[in-house]
Image 1: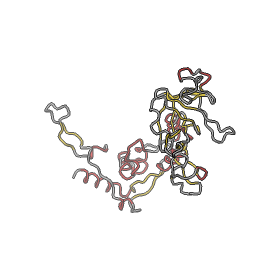
Image 2: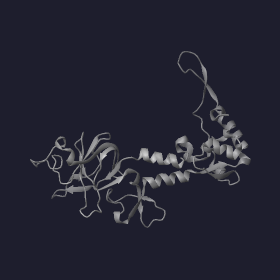
Image 3: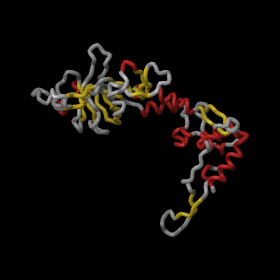
Image 4: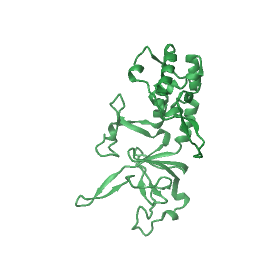
Length: 295
């Protein structure tokens, strides 16, 4: 029996032509009470093996594939459906390769004030700069442009830059203000940014459409870029703000970070630990669900 066959039906005119058909009422929802789930006699845990589908797990536990839907009722993270089901290692590797291709580039924002201490600029801030989808150009260090030096008569406009004066370019896929990251994909070449280098190597980034520009601070492969920061002395790795990017945050010297790769791997591992209804109670659970969903 499929999951939605348990739902009540309602009369509905799909085509607004007077022909009434029975439609499944998908707007009803039933969730297990927390007190019920916390009863160790009713539920147990199952660790999903690499590549196991919900119907396979249901068959292993209950002798039938038809109770797969109960996993989506009793696990909060599975309320998002199959996209939240733990991936096989092969699928996870492919997902990271496909969805986290490209570079994550951070800047180091600086508040600029005049002699009267009035703010005149938020240099290298990403707020209000660049448009998602535009082409981002990385200029060779030392090249003067009309964007960075508008008063330099010898400065080059972005259109005048030659290939040898550009280290890389790509499309701005995403912009994260909180993490102070530009995510650039479909890239040609590479980008420069390393605060640990001897010469503190950076470069100018220019938006081809907006003409917005910032100087890089650090360049990561997107998959290995920070997902969140935490204090180095915090064993629980609770997220905090980085003072390099957000005023009042934790000094960068006191921080470590969890990479996108680490986060995705740990999330997938955690999702593999599935809460399930004990086989002895599964029939009662199914019948109770069917009764409640039809009330």
